Image (cartoon, rainbow, N blue to C red; front, top):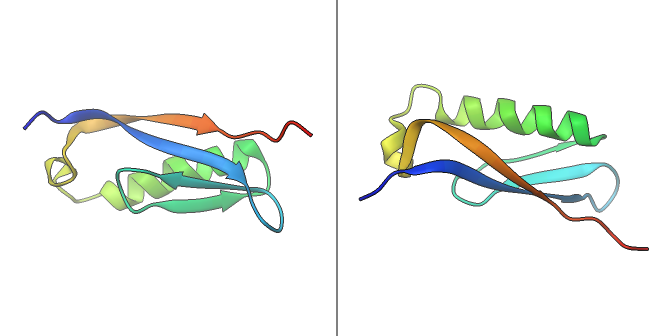
Length: 75
């Protein structure tokens, strides 16, 4: 089995306010009032989720990167 080098995350507008970030490969969801805040929260949440775990358990290399997709409304 080949280990993945990155974790994909999706950022979108929250229903009430701010932004929500959700990872696709691991169970991590976080939010923030600004894009900078949600990205910082996402990085911290993923780090904490993987801390002390064998990353291969999640089919990931030891220090994966984050690939983030941002959904924007046109109107």
